[in-house]
Length: 418
Image (cartoon, rainbow, N blue to C red):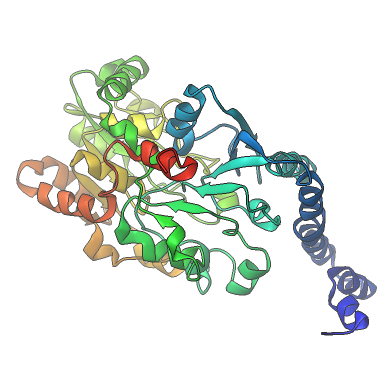
């Protein structure tokens, strides 16, 4: 055990004071101030607030859903949220931390209110990594379930990216954990358990990984939901009636805090080749803030529906899905329809973030780097599309998703049949 002097020497405050004496550039000073602020919030303030409020008894009826970035509950939560609120027996709370979307002061206030609330919660549901949830000394009575926001295991995340450009290194992730305090983690298939164990550093607790299926996928087995999705599309885009639908739904590029949209899809070329038979819907990742515009002369053919239609609705109404490295292709495989992988920057993306499986071998559809390749495939779907390839992909990565995942999750978490 070290001396008090050794402890003081290691604290960020002393390092900050010594660093400041050297009068570094303003950018370095801001970086150091940010590091100290993070240390104070995650190591001192938030754990202290949690301990204070956790002195009160657990509220057996309190359920907390929270989003790390967005201002509303995403589709990851909607089915589960509706199920628990329909019971009329729980006090359901929601929190929206708004990381990178609000000022630091506002984000800190959001975190404080969240920590106060979860200190007496019986159930907490997360759908994304959170160092705020992970920094508190979680009381054993609370059940924390990570439902995650994607299915399968496509691009790497968490500890799997420790040696890559994307994300934090292993030392940083251990110092400020993002995947602690989980009671359960729900999976779309037992096949992917190894990837989540690696990404979330759960080698000492692999039993918490449960192949219950993913709650949000239940809607894809609901005929009424699918019919409503078509009604939404036809209201949004009347010219889509009587035509087939191509969905272009890529993931973001760059870092999470400043997600960028890819801009290589040639909308005019697609219109000229397919405009008589198809319409094109474009859904950018929710973290993308600046989106490429649809050319004015193509707006009868193509529409950016990022803000106006949910991805679950779009997957239901689409005849073909074009994506790249997004996990939505796992959900789309439930429909057994054609997929195209527009991976023009695969080598760069692999170096940046990496994949859990060999990309060329796992993708159930053609990998294209040029617009012409995609158009040629679509124009010859009747001879090129291999449905069995998609069925095999679905079984491997989605076999726990059968329309009853929400029931299994609630049975698991609340022990309704124990």
